[in-house]
Amino acid sequence: MATAMTETLSPTQPVDLLAKFDPIIQTRETLLAAGVEDPFNLVMEQVLSPTRAICNGRDTILLGTYNYMGMTFDPDVIAAGKQAMEDFGAGTTGSRVLNGTFRDHRDVETALREFYGMDHAMVFSTGYQANLGIISTLAGKGDYIILDIDSHASIWDGCAMGNAEVVPFKHNDVEALEKRLKRIPEGAGKLVVLEGVYSMMGDVAPLKEMVRVSKENGAMVLVDEAHSMGFIGEHGRGVAEEQGVLDDVDFIIGTFSKSVGTVGGFCVSNHPKFEVMRLVCRPYVFTAALPPSVMASSATSIRKLMHGGNKRAHLWENSRTLHGGLKALGFQLGTDTPQSAIIAVIMPDLEKGAMMWEALLKEGLYVNLARPPATPAGMTLLRCSLCAEHTADQVQTILGMFERAGKAIEII
Amino acid sequence: MSPAEVDASIRALVEPFNKKGIAIEDATTFAGDLEFDSLTVMDFVAEIEDEFDVIISMNQQAEIENWGQLIAAVHKLQDS
Image (cartoon, rainbow over all chains, first blue to last red; front, side):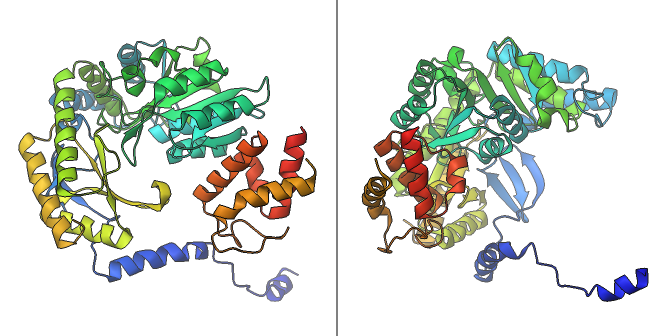
């Protein structure tokens, strides 16, 4: 019988589940056939400092790493990590709620509470998981999430993972947000999700007005400060601090993989019931906790960032110099004024963008090539993120590289 | 508003987005026939929301593929 069945089951050709990606494969092949170095396959053979690496065999200035405060090579940060690895081992092999909470997981949460002056802090394995977990858990069936259309993928994925009604509004448009809030049925739970700095264009949100209209309409507010922690605001707490509305924000989401210089994500809050999230938030519960070395390095870095006023000032100088310089060279930028440590250079199309990216790489400069769907309005961007460790000379060198590459590719 | 009035009203709103001047019937799809990308959808939905003072959440949008479904959904929303 078994034999007979095997014989009657003719081997049918399976539907190729990867066929749907053929257009992407095609675009990539066309790009590479033009002789361009693969922008999404760069290897850093050696990392020399927060601002320099050997990339694809070349000594390269790094201008696309989000390493805003240059903490990756801070001697104290490295020493703390080494010691924790010696004392606690290489990894946790467990969930935070089982065997994965070590001394340093608690300590980094203490450091975050000190940094933000808030009552509660919860550390996730990545910033992506922090958004995924907090958003999907907070807003349930019948609740509404109102979010900016240019929100990061982790925010959208948090919406998709939950059961709430999802209502987007036009980027940074206070009136569009307010109108939608007013139309939500009476009595429904409302979570407004905003970002301090939007990472594609490097622009800042009008949080003061947005938090006000959210509160006036009975919504809770979550702000992702991934790209502002560490250097925007007097204490580096982000755009909400800078605009004086930190006390009205219910949940701040952040990451360790930018200014902090390690990896991990977090949520801080003053909500009295916040600790229950540790029990109900699946991307927190059902994954392994970060290694103790990462936690010790992060805690040390966060505490040092609290006293990073001079570095913050230098980073702003770098941002202003690069923004002004690129503008003077004739490049089209994502923002009229420097609003953050991200400066987006708008490319005419993907082909020119890839050529410019490669020309810069050959000059010895690494920036991010960003293209749809990550970018708004189908744009191709060369995204530059500055570091507090870039010297004033390096910024001038960078401007020279942009000038030569821009003229060679005929963008300026 | 009757379904016919809703249809007429949204027909006026869609015009600037219907760049190729496709003749719209109930079965006309937004993604396929009208070639709307996600940003166009957002702008078009915002126009409808403002006109009718309603919210069409993304969850609801996911159920709307063609013109007829949109008219029916908005007609229902403005009554509730």
